[in-house]
Image (cartoon, rainbow, N blue to C red; front, side, top):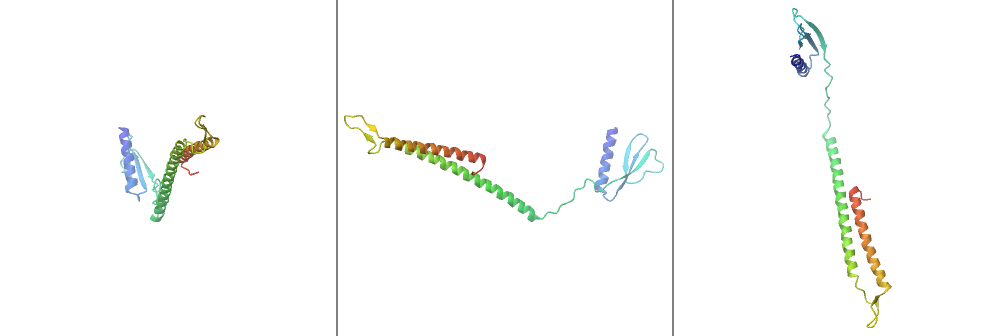
Length: 168
């Protein structure tokens, strides 16, 4: 029962503080049974119990309205949108870099496969001797294999840049 009275009293206090901002003085009356009552009027002469005057600070727990101009908010939104658009553009560029690097790997692998056949002048031997490939053939194949490795390394670097979200 005391909790009910306490809650009721707090609600009354809040109601007075919200609805009557200009009323700065409240009276707290505790009767002989311990019942607490808040009022904006002093207790009657014949009431038994203890009455105290409570001064309410009307400026406490009040937020002031900040008048921000719409240009400031629009500018902030514009800045946020521009940064978001820049991140999207960077992500798209980095994805494009990955696709180009992957295409380079495909092209390098195709060139290697096509280059496995010796070109004229890259073999020795004849009808009676076994066919041998010349050092020029092996150099050309080594270059093609190196191009494949470089292209694969470029894919890896492009994927790392994408993961970091940085073009560097």
